[in-house]
Length: 153
Image (cartoon, rainbow, N blue to C red; front, side):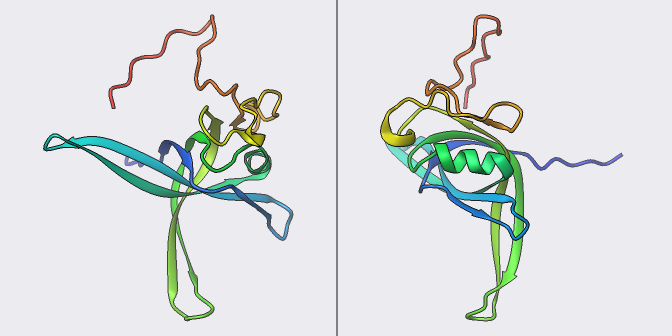
């Protein structure tokens, strides 16, 4: 049996404030750009490379993202990679865009915390809608959870 996997996991910072819109049927759709930066050493010189990703979030999760996230805020994203196309009305050319259709968004600490207060407690969301606004302290385990494995990446 042959199978495949389309899974994308990203941790990065919003490049601009999220843009919320609604479809004709009333479904919320939120878009934002996400920057992931890789730091490495090349011939003894510190280097940086930033990749930009187009993120799309739907439904209640989209509304929460638009409400609680801002440019610079760090997030964890899980989703699938999708490429779509359309005809440009001005040029008539076929255009393409690759996006991450996010089904899980976890708010992490970092710059751009909603309202600039540094406190996003009581900000709604939760595991039932795929959004975890967090406590501004990232993935701090509770007393009852096992310690996380160290990631070497």
